[in-house]
Length: 470
Image 1 (cartoon, rainbow, N blue to C red):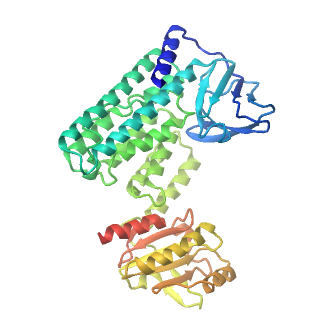
Image 2: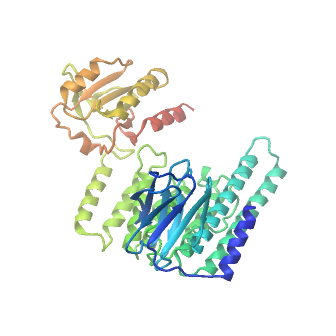
Image 3: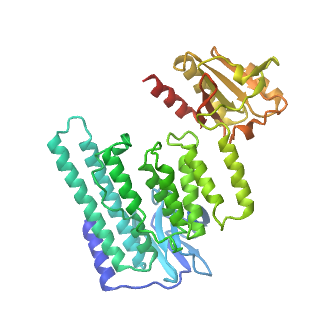
């Protein structure tokens, strides 16, 4: 039935092609909408999803967002009460098209665009993508099961490739039918080339393997062909950051050519300063996310240095970037951690470099941070039962409320080899030297006080020592 409905929409699109005039209102229709029901609109601005108007239904069954000027071209999302529709409804605003749009929620989780052909096509396309991805995921699970024979695996690989081809054929047909539209740009950007090998071949396990090098080189040559970097049409969508993060996920974090790969992408996007900023931010976040196992500080630094070289980046921002680079260089993984001189609750002094243990875990926290007090018991329990027996923890309070800190320390118990310390007079400038952006933050040092984990979280700490044991 879904396939039939989609065919009808495609036929209508071919027989009655229409460009839509400047929009000024969006009408939501649903029997489930009650008087007083609230809907929230979101708009993507320069790659970031931004909350827009919250509209309250004045009458049963309908709600309308009205604007005296046309809405900006871009990707929009609608959030309704869950009893109306579960999940965000995605739609597009094309430039100078249709002064009205009606989104009809005729039954639960069924969305129709009554007078907007482009969004009818787009909605059907998204449904096809989801359906294809679901089918591929089921085949992937079957193909990677332990009891699947080699003959079955080859058959599954063929089925996956056939599904991928059908989706690409659909995408190509829509791209050809709707030139010079946001719909065209999004589908073209989403349409990935047929890669060597199969998704059943986990080529990322060994970066030295031939299939890894073949596939990643293919991606470098082809992945971004669907993007016109000079065109602004994709700026007000969430596609650019998501596509960037997906792209970089194909590469192993220890790939020796990763910095070159990142520079290639930055150079391509530099023809459009706003697009460069969106892609640069997404790349930087991919290699510098707290606790993320794919962190690579050398790549993060290379991204910052690339931004400093761009003529369109203002001088004030370059100064800020330079500070970020200096902070990255401090306590970089593999280098000796900056020394700290701290005191415990009895005013006894401890010097970080003088602590004698194979591992030193620095746990930066604040008792007034709810997430810190949530993690602290888990941290103590893990260290007592599964933590390194040849390690110690330095739980470091980073603020200056001595009374609050001492009260917290006295009210709790701690496992052996656990120190509660603080920077009594703020002389160590801990937040600056250790670049603490969020709490709690965890570092792991080896016996020579070289950094093993930096700006990590509890999950990555546990995973690291779990991997280390194995």
